[in-house]
Length: 260
Image (cartoon, rainbow, N blue to C red; front, side, top):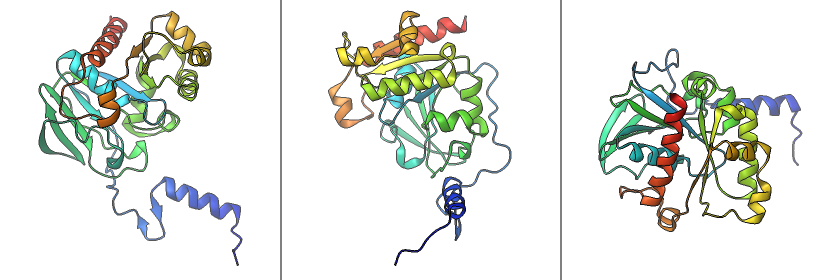
């Protein structure tokens, strides 16, 4: 016989799961964050926040592509360890950087990713101040969670004058892009569509909403082409394809223009 569970008990259980709390206490694989979760940036450190509009959008590729287009930089991947898209992207592993951060490098690009299990963006420990003065934050969480999250990561998304949002050229992907622009405010968004060739498929073109069309008309929508090798293998220590870096170079130019 199946027991009846009260609605308030279900609500409490849901909140406990979101907060990482269970009958046996906090989940043992999540490292609790001590103290105020704030991030003290270096004075001259330039920061770009990159957010995927949906799973598999290509945000990690765009974040890494921005660093390679710049010729140097640090990429911070803030998702839980099991969801990492950059775990195999380093050509050299440099060990622990403290607070669960694992550091690696690929040429002049530094990669720091979380090695711990995180249950919310608020639980992401703050990184150290940058050794390199260009930091790209691959946020790694759903934008709805980020926009309301406490801690340094939520503060970053809410406070930056421009947030890079990444989507795939599908009808659901562009719907999520439209929702992201509405949530953050169209004027705070630079959109990247990953996997789009020179011409927009008709059905995808029709799915572009008013925010998306306005971003494209204003020159704040960048297209990055599809690469079959990346689609199969993911990010590896091999250099990114030239076509991907070229698309990210256009994005970098757009970001630099907004800073002036």
